[in-house]
Image (cartoon, rainbow, N blue to C red; front, side, top):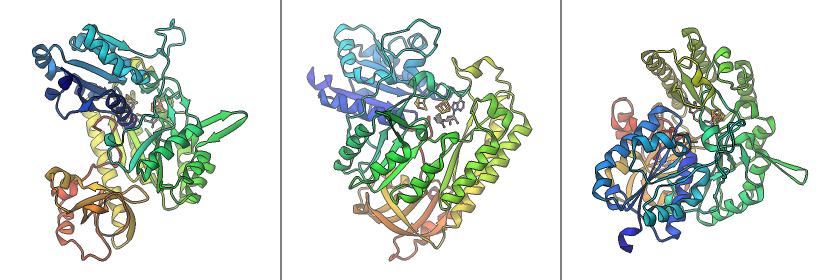
Length: 497
Ligand code: SAH
Ligand code: SF4
Ligand code: F3S
């Protein structure tokens, strides 16, 4: 029994928060003797860390669960668990659609996962650990608050061993009218700067060179103790001192909280990436107001102006929602106009998806899906054109790249060759693909750019000749090299595994 009793399959969808949560859960389970396996068939515990941000993300999980129905019937001793945002949002629905699920654990209760798996296995009884809901008028729906258990770190679970997420904020209090995150992740809380510094040192000791600070509105970070307040800018200064850390990034920013002092910190700290992800969501004031985003287009433009003045070499990226309740063609045109004016490095563009429990769920979802799809395509085409123009400005330049690993194409070929196509990022978060030796992974290197696609810069080490093959492929948009690496540098909130 022990041999099969400690094999876990863990699949993750959702944002960076979920990727980090999965790292923690895996660390917790490994401490209890679990091994990770790559297929549900080989596991005796099957876990999904889930996302509720759009319907599509939830359907992916229901479909994965549906595929396990027969498997569970044949192996009733296996424990199947749903972790993360869907568990918090939809416990009844999950049990109704997948009655064979044994375990539900919300994002604020993940520290209980190992114990609950054991209880489910021994007792054969369903286990649920959810956090309190956020309706101030409802009686307490449970004893538990939203907690974070970050100090457990597991380098093997990271996308790259020298890159790590560091959660500085949990939850969200902004309550944008369309968004489920304040309900699934709970009230906004900030972790103590001393604790963050300790964790950053631990990560640096584990070989981490790049830290990505995480928060739903990361630049709202404010920790006050003994009358002293630490802002994100202050925190960056502190983390900048840590030896071994070569780059610092932070996502996601909220437009109204983008202070000059934060921009100045990024300007003055050489390890800070010149990259700001600041979702605009819509370019129409009427829609922004309905979204309860708390800023107007004019303020966003002023913020872009301040970024241009203080950080002229910075890249800004955005999230945009198309087809929100009541969005007219002229509202959409205003969003396209903002994309043109702001020249984002890239944008994540989403079709509005009504979410139960949010304010917007009461309003008519009145933009037909075909119109949402068409607006999504038009906006993406515009963004792609801008991204290509901006990336082409890099041709002939030599940029500093942090080498992340084999490029997606090389990884797909699963080659163990010493020389292969590598992928990394510039200081302004642009993806660079170039041929090189495997040992360069994890290093910061100069790379000369020969060609550009909308999402990737193609280059070579400065002392190597141009790679004509890659450059030629870039000229043909359907060629595999052009689709190398994700179209968007950050994991799309529902596709990241
Ligand atoms: N905290 C981050 C984003 C969290 S969710 C922020 O405020 O920027 C990531 C993105 O998903 C959002 O920026 C938004 O563009 C999109 N999103 C959230 N809820 C959505 C919904 N109901 N339908 C479509 N897109 C949504
Ligand atoms: Fe959702 Fe708005 Fe909070 Fe972002 S700021 S997580 S979009 S409620
Ligand atoms: Fe949760 Fe992140 Fe999705 S906070 S709802 S996993 S985008």
